[in-house]
Image (tube, rainbow over all chains, first blue to last red; front, top):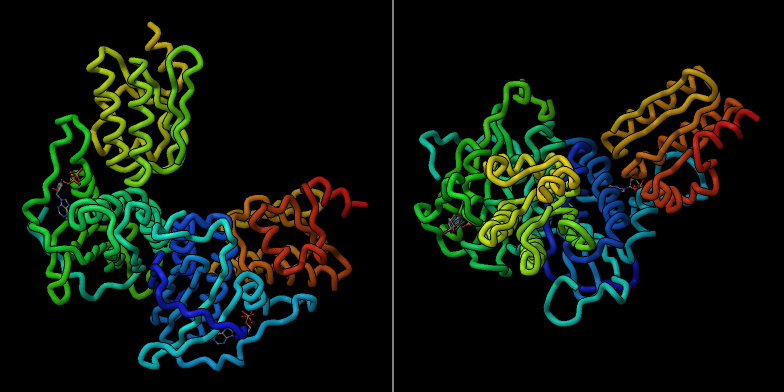
Amino acid sequence: MTAPEAPPAADNRLLAEVRVPARADRLAVVRGTVHAALRAAGCDALADDVVLAVDEACQNVVRHAYGGDTDGDLVVRLSRAPDRLFVELRDYAPPVDPDAVCGRDPADVRPGGLGTHFIETIMDDTRFLSPPRGVGNLLRMTKRLPAHLRLEGEGDTP
Amino acid sequence: MTAPEAPPAADNRLLAEVRVPARADRLAVVRGTVHAALRAAGCDALADDVVLAVDEACQNVVRHAYGGDTDGDLVVRLSRAPDRLFVELRDYAPPVDPDAVCGRDPADVRPGGLGTHFIETIMDDTRFLSPPRGVGNLLRMTKRLPAHLRLEGEGDTP
Amino acid sequence: MTVDIDDTGGVPVARIKGEVDLKTSPRVRKALLDVLKKRDTLIVDLSNVDYIDSSGVASLVEAYQTARKAGGQVSLAAVSQPALRVLQLARLDQVLPIRDSIESASAEIAE
Amino acid sequence: MTVDIDDTGGVPVARIKGEVDLKTSPRVRKALLDVLKKRDTLIVDLSNVDYIDSSGVASLVEAYQTARKAGGQVSLAAVSQPALRVLQLARLDQVLPIRDSIESASAEIAE
Ligand SMILES: Nc1ncnc2c1ncn2[C@@H]1O[C@H](COP(=O)(O)OP(=O)(O)O)[C@@H](O)[C@H]1O
Ligand SMILES: Nc1ncnc2c1ncn2[C@@H]1O[C@H](COP(=O)(O)OP(=O)(O)O)[C@@H](O)[C@H]1O
C-alpha cells in the first residue's frame, strides 16, 4: 500500500477531526463528518469517493486491527494543503504489519477483499506512519486535488 | 444559564467527538457529526432538537467567545449515561463570564437573542465547567432521555 | 443554500432551499430586504428548508418588521417540518403569518 | 437500512433502502440468501440505496454466485447513482447484470 512519493502532512490546515469508538455502528458518524467537512471545503465533487475510501479504511481498523467491535477509539483527521487533501486514521490497536494489508484483483470475482482496492483507486497515496508515542497505528491517505479545487493564497474555501 | 442540579458527566460513554476550526462555515460539520451520532445511538427522535441546541452554542463560541472566525478550534464531545445525554463544548478563547450569557424573552419580538432561549428550551441543564488546565471555556449541556431511550445493561444502542 | 426571488407578477415570492445557518443567513437577510426596498409585501416559501437556526429566524423577523413598518406584510408559506419546529421554539408561529401554500398566502395578501 | 422482499408473483424482488455498510450489510446478505433458498432468480432494486460499501457489494456478489451455482440468476435493477459508482469501482458493472428497471430485468429473466 506504499507509493514512492511521500508528501509531508505538516503545514496543512485542519478541516475536521472526529473520534468515535471503533464499532461498526459508528462508521456512519465518520461518514457524516467527512461528507460535511468536504462540502464545507468546497470539495463536493470528491466527497462520495473520499467518504468511501475513509469508510473502508475505518472498517479495516474495526475488523482487522481491533479484530471486531471494541471500546478502543478511532480518530479520523481531515486536513488540506493548497493542492491536496490528507486523511489521517489513528487507532490504538496492536501494531499492524503493513505488508499484511493487500487486497485482491477485482477481476477475481468473489465476495471480500475489495476495501483496499477501493482505497487505492480513490486515493493517490496510502501509507502507515509512525504513530505518536509508538501506540497504535497511523495510516495516512493523500488525494491530489484537481486544479479547480486548489487554493490560491490564504482563504481555505475556494 | 445554570440550573440547580449538576449531574456528573464522568462514567459516561463516548458517542462521538468532533474538532473543527471555530468558523461559521464549519458549523455544518458539527451538525453532520452530531446528527449521525444521535442516529447511531438510537436517538433519532431527539436529533433535530439537540443538533439545533449544539449549533446555537457553537455559534455563540464563534461570535462571542472568539469574536468572529478564527483559527482557534472548537471541540464538541457527545456522550451518554443510561438516562441522559451530555454535550461538552470546548473552546480556547479568552474566559467568558457566565453571567454575561443571557437571552431575551421570545415574547419581545425582534431579531437576535434567540440562541440561548433555544438551548434552554431544548436542554435540561447548561453550565460552564472549569476547562482543563484553565485554558479556554468548557460548556456542558445535559438532556434527560425519555424512558424508552434509556439504556438497560451494557449495550449502548437500544 | 439558495434564495430564488420570483417577482414576475402578483406578490413577490422568495424560495429558500437548503440549510439556513450562521454562514448562509446573511444571504437570506439581504435577499429579503432587497425585495422590500421596492415592494411592501413578500411571501417566503420555506418548503425546501432542511434546517434553520436562530440567525435564519432573525432574518425572517427582520424582513417581517421592515414590511410592517412600511404598512406591508411578510408571510411564510408551505413551511417544512424542521422549519416549523424552530419557529414554534421561537414562539413566532403566533406572530408571523404562516400559510399552507403560496396560493393561500397570496390570495390573502391580494384581498 | 431496510430490505423488503416482494415474492407475490413472478420473479421475487428485494428492495433495499438506505445505507448499506459494515453494520447493515449482514442483514442484506441474509435477506438475499434466504430468498435464494427457495427461488433461483432474484431482482435487487437498488434505486433507493444512498450508500453502499465493499461489504454491501460482497453481499450482492455472494447472492449472485449462489444463484449462478443453482443455474439461476440475480440481476440488479434501477441502480442509484451512488451505488452504480461503487459497482463500477469494483468493476462489477461488467459482471453482474444491471438493468434500468424492475420490468426490464423481470422480462429478461422470464424469457
Ligand atoms: N488496518 C488493518 N489492520 C490489519 N490488517 C489489515 C488492515 N487493513 C487490511 N488488512 C488486511 O488486508 C486484507 C485486505 O483488506 P480489504 O481489501 O479491505 O478486504 P477484506 O477486509 O474484505 O478482507 C484484509 O483481509 C486484512 O488481512
Ligand atoms: N459563548 C459565549 N461567550 C460569550 N458571550 C456569550 C456566549 N454565548 C452567549 N453570550 C452572550 O449572551 C447573549 C445572548 O446570546 P444568544 O441568545 O445566543 O443571542 P445572540 O447571540 O443573537 O445575541 C449574546 O449576545 C452574548 O452577549
